[in-house]
Image (tube, rainbow, N blue to C red):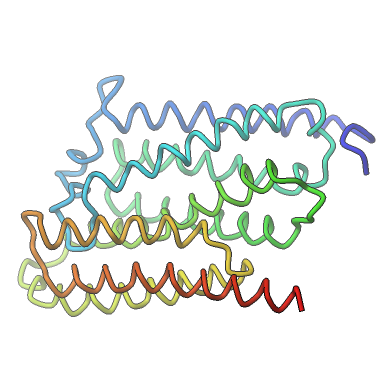
Length: 270
């Protein structure tokens, strides 16, 4: 089907909804950063989201990953609003889902400000689920004819978003547990943290494998793990086993998909 053929009223509604979802996300982000009288995320919920509040929260520098994600989403929003994108099957299949991920992203930021820490856990799990569905649909419906811009703005941006939210979900749950469980549970933090990071490695590799060993999701996971290692080895809340494990897992989740991608492309070439 051509880009402009058989346009429907729902196509225009989808384009408008995607724009509105992005605006909502940006407003939520502004509130989360302390604008409009809000409390900065690291200080909200009694400091539960600060880098040294829990053993699985990365250093503040890790959150720079939002810059390419937000920039990619901003360009996607403009691109999908073009008349040439209105009736494309890819946009019809994915536009609603991408809008949902942006709404849930903004909703999490609002939840941090006004609801409980466990409400943020529910919200980020919903966001993670939406991103998993969006990413898997994106990679399974992609065709070579879709072009490089489509691949970057849909597959790569969604993959980066998914990878980061995967690790952020772990950090969010850890923050909620730290804020609510008895203090003497801290003695098990190292063992539990190492086990959780091993699970993160398995999940990261499963996500990458399901998408044909794409790199975007594991790239943002490895980025977050690297800054988690910095926080645990050089921050105020030191935990060497967790820090070392984070480094090892970061290397594994990068190398295995790169090798897997190389082998896959070589097999296809043969």
